[in-house]
Image 1 (cartoon, one colour):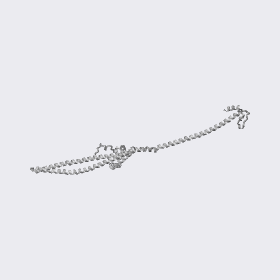
Image 2 (cartoon, helix red, strand yellow; image 1 turned 90 degrees about the vertical axis):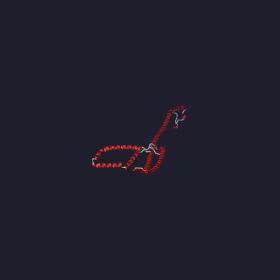
Image 3 (cartoon, one colour; image 1 turned 180 degrees about the vertical axis):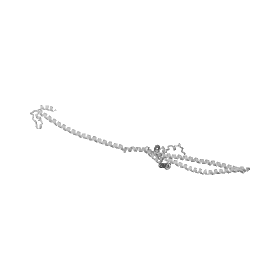
Image 4 (tube, helix red, strand yellow; image 1 turned 90 degrees about the horizontal axis):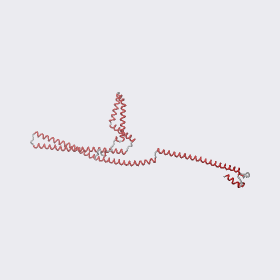
Length: 342
């Protein structure tokens, strides 16, 4: 099946200049051309001065010849083109992620483009075969007509009654038509041989075209399979990356996390130390307060004892140890002392 330029086979084809690296290459070429023009303007006075000197002129001519050789040599141009495309692809890859599936699709597109060219050439070859066949048919008719004319002239001469001039004219017409028919038959023989060879070639190319189309279809199916597989793997890989970030963590975030934990540990230790120091100080203060309270109580008991001694009658004798003898205190007075103590 022939593929026309507007068919789906011809759609989506991109050459180097239509790709992202081609766009970057165009920008670089424009900038390079501007730089070359600016540099030429800058060195123009030097070139004019150098042209006045024979030695400088010879060197300039030699440089121009070398430049012309580089420009006109196909290998140098091919190498420069490949280097330029590689550099542009590398520079483009620095800020654009080159999709491998896209590269494969471009390769399939190039194959389809070649397949379309093959279809066009097959059409041209088939047209040439048909042209040869038409020419063979035309020559065959002309040869048959020339033979008929020669036979008719022969019949006229056989009938007799012709003047010598007519006899000579009929003979000349017979010979001319016979030669013309023979020439056409020889041409047809050569054209028929060429037609047969072209038919064999055409049939072979048709088989090759079918094989080529199968190869393109097979590779296209494989690319589609790889595209679906890559999409699925990228989705799975994104989940894996998320889990990996959770387990490994970001180095900066991990460092901040560790530093925060260290700060919290140091701050907690500082607060616990301060609380322990406060507890020790509080215990010391409580102990001192207990001691002071006991001393104050002892002093109060002592003062009360002295006050009691002052209130007792002189006749009351003191018992050893400074304690009062309860039997020596009247019952009626005991209650009064108790009220005083209260």
